Amino acid sequence: MSTIIQDVRYGARMLLKTPALSAIVILALALGIGANTAIFSVINGVLLRPLPYPEADRIMHLRQPQTAAGVEDSLFSFPEVAHYRSQ
Image: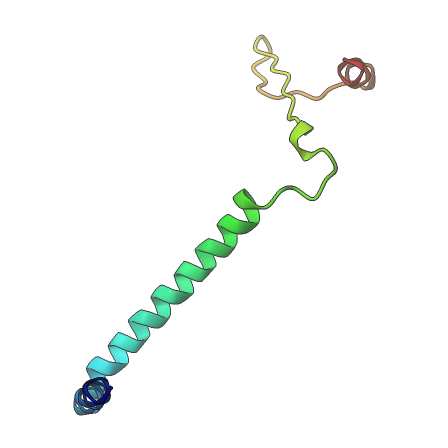
């Protein structure tokens, strides 16, 4: 236990001896921890958590391309939506 205390004291003395280096190290650690937390929060919210809808695994995205008209994603009419929904 005394060896750990001596190591901590030595580390503190070295940090106080070079305050610019200490500030850079602390800033780098703070930026790294902050970036890691932010990225994990985004990944957790977007990829890991289930969607807040009932039967979220059944949600679909439909596209209706009109290649002859040069439109990649055109709108659906109400009868078309009703037809897809019935199937």
